[in-house]
Length: 223
Length: 227
Image (cartoon, rainbow over the protein chains, first blue to last red):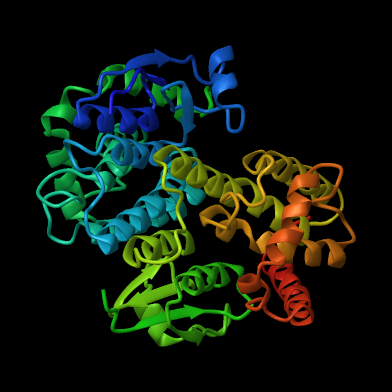
């Protein structure tokens, strides 16, 4: 199937846009990246392409827009059926991957955001909740190299961003959310996934993400 | 593929286990329904099968447990590939269906519960949000009979429960969430989907859901008093 055009509306510092880039790169799909000035200055085109949630990332394929990064990941795998297999083959494994991606997006993301934007006693309670959430997430790894098995797959793409962003947040706030005490296997996976060539060469500059994260966590800028 | 055993842990009063039952019925799959006393008295077995979120529904197929109703529906379609087609065939339409199901869960659901559980000004705000959310959701329907086209599909199963529960909440709270002013096409779809044979014959008794809803409303309001 010859695709006419693939455009990705994203933002250089967004983990959710990055997930989609990883999927495109795994498939060897050529795409045009359109960087949006999030959240202050969204382009007219973005708002036209995604009037419902007005967010990035938005994939435009053959003129048809699609929002929601995890939905986009599956669309990419469904559409470019040759080459790298992103979703697990087995229906049960596939369902489990979707379950854990949802758990991560529902629990781990909000717990991370909550702990790093709170203070004092409230923060301590939220810290335990975040540590528990990642300890639970680790179960999905169950002795494998990657969530996808020997190679990275859907769930690795869905949560790989934590491997890069979490240590940055931890450094800024001097807190430990994922460590050898609550989630040693997940911590090892952090190192392993950041070492995957495609991932390593696609990460945004760490110092710039540090700077932006400091602003973000202090409430200076919103999501 | 011969399945040894299909069990569904759910609740007779839960919209989320109901949508899984709809998927099973569409495929003609025989299953054992295990009713859980939610939320007060979950069984040991349920907590063992779903220690992560501890919720129903949980599908157990060949002894392998799977929670999360929308994930279960896709699993059912992926596994029982003969018979009724639940997911759209076209990748873009499939993606759109998933997008809208997520939108409904993220926007319509909390706003609907917000209307049901809040009072005064807070309730009015939620009502406004809910009306807007459903008005937006209607876009996914367009001029089709069902979200799935001529027949019900994934998105109809995902959001069909609103057709039954929203009017009940509207009645209890004397508000209007989905009407001819904000979402006439969706309102028409409410009537249409409740008239689908399989759906019609699987609904729990309205007066019992009305009662349970009122009872749970008190429980939830007390649990986290929200002005």
